[in-house]
Every structure is written in structure tokens, then in C-alpha cells.
Length: 236
Ligand SMILES: [Zn+2]
Ligand SMILES: [Zn+2]
Image (tube, rainbow, N blue to C red; front, side, top):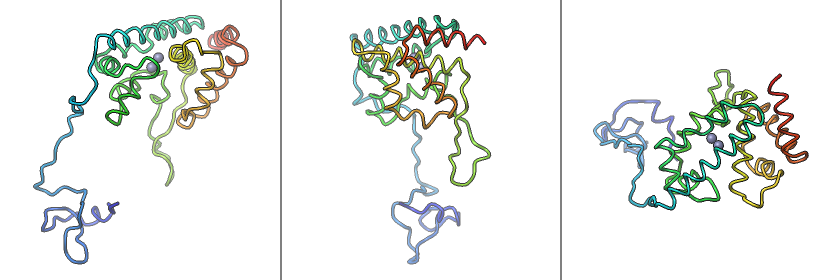
């Protein structure tokens, strides 16, 4: 690894055109990350090469459209049972936008999120970056800068999510587990997914605690009891 602080400490252009400190022999260190003043710096277009990307077929198009619509209907049903009518209608609408829809159709899997297939292919998910910035039921939406952070602390801080979005996230996890697990789904499945994942470490502690409480209640007492509990507590 290169020592970047060395580069920024001088800032003077040298014979080779690089803005860095020369080594003891007065030569330009190899593999400098700082481009020369006259070097051609290519602008990243944000569009990965299409050459090797999987094609969009009619089957995948229909499969993806069916899956996201089925998912939306399951979340709608859950949200409406607890009185979140508007959120139930608007849930994941951005999945029908071109940016998210075409990625979903191209990487349609049927048993897991197409975003993961896109990540494996190009290193990140365009579709997810578009989705998480627009949908408040994702804890990733609720991340802000930490201006009071001390040395060594993360500059990003999780913000506590309003209860109605935690509930929408709860419904989202139930619907996703039902679709991806099919007949193997039980009331314990969404809790198992949460326990096995790393989401907790990126959430505000109170957000994680509320989500876990609801998932645990679902696992122990079932949907009818848990939804009635949520409904009565959301209206207070
Ligand atoms: Zn979503
Ligand atoms: Zn969803």
C-alpha cells in the first residue's frame, strides 16, 4: 500500500508530472496513485460494460414482474391489517422504475434478490443504490453523518427509524421470506433470517430492538396476535 499522507504533504509537481514527494534517490515511486498533470484521467460513466452481462429474456421479464407484484401485494395485505394504508400502497413502487426494473429482470433468480446477482457480476448493485435512497422502510435510508464523532469513530451514524417504517420493514421481511422460501416458510423464518444476518450492526439500537421484538413475537405467538399488537400500538 502506498502512503498517501506523503503525497499530500508536499503538493508540488515534480519532473515526472506527479504531485508527490520523491524518494531518496530522486525518482518517482512506482505505482503512484496520483495521476500526472498531463495524464489522461478517464471519467467513469457509471454504466458497466454490457458485453458480458446476462441478457433479459421474456421468461425473466415475466418472472421478475410477477415476483415484485406478488411481493407488493403481500406487503399491502400486512400493512393494511395494521392500518398502514398509504405505506401499503406505496411500498417498493420504485421497483417499477426503469433503473430498478431492468436490473431485476436481467438478474432475475426467483429464490433470492436479483440485487445480489448484480453485486456478484459488477461488484455493487445500481438497483439497490436507487432503491435504498427512496424507500424509508430500509434502515440504510436512515444513515447520516456524525458531526460529533470522536477520533476513530465511524463518520456515519444510524438514525432511529419512526415506528411505522419499522413496521413496514417487518412486513417486508415477512413477505420476502414467504416468497423466497415458499412452502418451507414458518412464523420463525423472518426471525431466523434476522439472526443470521448482519443488519443489526448498521441499525440504530432502538430500531434493531423494536424489529427484533416484533420478529420474536411473530415466531412465538403468530401473525394474528402480533398484527393485533402492532395495530393497537401504532394507533396510540
Ligand atoms: Zn424495499
Ligand atoms: Zn419490499
